[in-house]
Length: 332
Image 1: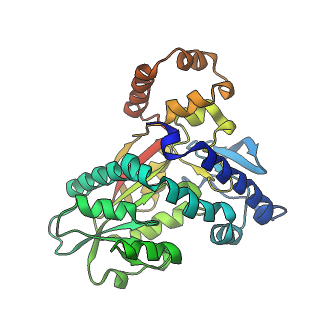
Image 2: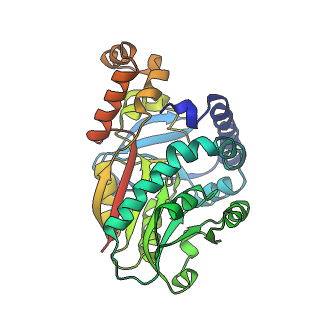
Image 3: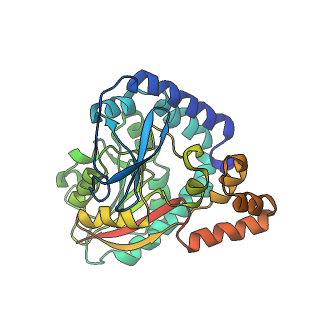
């Protein structure tokens, strides 16, 4: 897979340009406050770099990379409600790449999630619900419904009005709320045996609260399937602050296999699996070779053909060093 297939350069550059303008609109001069590590809660950290006015620190205990200090949560909330870059991603960018994402990312992810749900959920539930948190355009819910057989019921949680309508047009039962406002009554007496959340943790002001809210809606022994960026992954390590994945104010938390385990275990989950099934690390580094400081990696990538690059990516997957991370956890 190539990055261009799911993130066309022209569209992605426009998105990043809008994000820079949003920083001025929403965050310029905003008061900031110190925060503890979003994974382990430690206050022991070291400054790593500043990008576009946001300081990134690394926790000395668990090596989570995160923005600190950070503006008040209310500012982030207004940003996600009104920012041009957020609107562009949810409309133009996602709409224009929906077909490619459905084929290359969403359908394979639904098949993987479906297999995990069947493997780890208990068969005794009469009306088991699987809920996708942040259903967006509903593509994942549609794909998951086609993968999971009865008795599983697929629902989505989506607070954005326009996206709720898109989900309903696709015959998806959508709960029109933020996760923290969702209660058992929203599931019509059914038990939530699994919840999914993709590419969300890196955006959240308070990841610990989000994981607690996930724990709350799940039935006993229900499973949570997450994907997020791995701060110890190959392209992030090679490119550092030059990585386009480090894009404030959108991406403010970068966990790693060790720290995400700490995060979930502290909120009452048991880890079942952690993997890094990413497919884009080598391609992303190849496109930014001048920004790679390691001469050996520059030479290795520059002399490698597509076949060798594919083997390198496979090694990253097997060694849990890709920058795309997936976690499967069970509520205790």
